Length: 313
Image 1: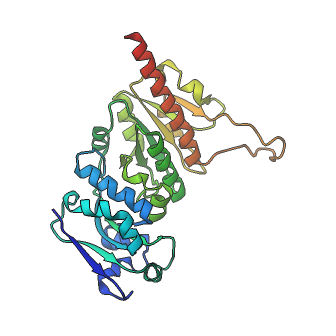
Image 2: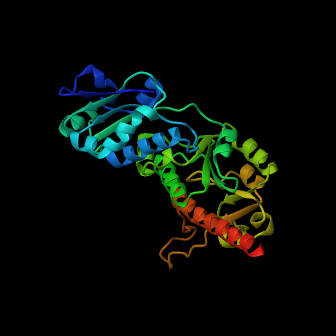
Image 3: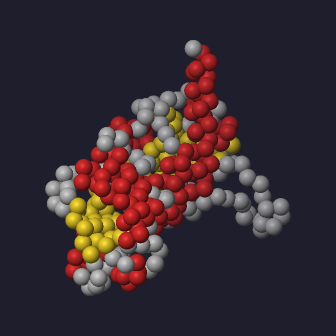
């Protein structure tokens, strides 16, 4: 069990807070094995997920806090969770909480988006698909990403997953780091509550998951694609115990090799621009918004399945 060590900081050159100085994601990831969380609200979700995990709420990967740098107001806001940290942290060393005026935080970090609160977390050990499936409910679906490289889209996807619930995220084929500072911020801290894992070979992993009973849906607008509401009603999709929606890169979409693995290709029906788009310029959604539409569809399909099962009893 950790102990809290609260320390006052009055000088931005103080060596105790070197890791917070001019925070850059590449440095944190490569040099220190850390990640950065900004703002009281997002740190609140980070610490809440940590304490919930310590109390037995299943999630993966497991996260830990390294240290916090807070303004007095942020410390007051976070106090209930700060007091719960000693029992939630597995480390034996004192857990450092640095207190400084907000002006010093801005000078130290080089920007003001922190709103008086910065936290450093320990990068978790990469967990595999078995660990991901183990913490999800038996009927939970998955979102799989292939080459989704923009941090905004990864963050938006996690925010959608956290809002609709009952879903895990499988990141494959060069998808962006969900613990990038901006991805955490755009996700509104949902990267800490949505179970996720990384795939080193998405094609192989999806093939294995299909053999284990998952139905695969490629989210792609092709001439043969079915509207999402029709695709979810196909017998092979509707009767499957679990489903995976495969989302592709922002420009190239779902690779043909992954599309061929899927049971169906589904699209989001959209209208054109009423003549305002030039020829060949089709309407489209970015992958984060598309993930929300598909997650809404999966959520409705699960609800429909439960209602139908209940009616049979």
